[in-house]
Length: 144
Image 1: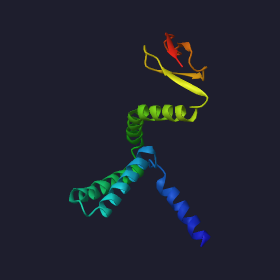
Image 2 (image 1 turned 60 degrees about the vertical axis):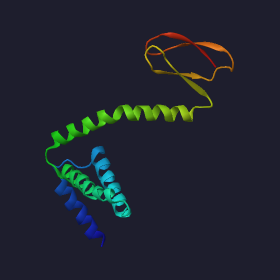
Image 3 (image 1 turned 30 degrees about the vertical axis):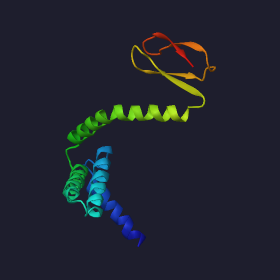
Image 4 (image 1 turned 90 degrees about the horizontal axis):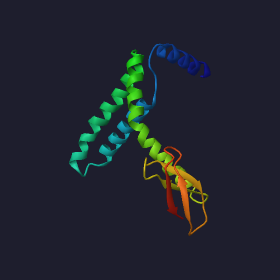
């Protein structure tokens, strides 16, 4: 039995040579497609949700097409465009995660000039402090 699975793995490696394979866009497409199909299966009460199933299948098929494609350059460009679209969202999410994780030791102030966040150790309560932006070097006063 072990030999069968080993042979299957070697055959899959040979088959995938020269093909694009898996990337982040493929994972998002396949997971979203699966979620849409599951929503359409479990929501027979509201008729418009039944149209989600074909959309989900199309997303899964597109993911499979991208995975087995031999046009690697084009698939890399698609993935790079996707990553550029998602980059600001991830950046904001990471900022809010850090703000929550460090809420007891650090405080974040938004620069009124360039709108970036300045991270400081927790200053004493009830005092005014001068905060200097690390990006534009603008100085502004904040009450803690």
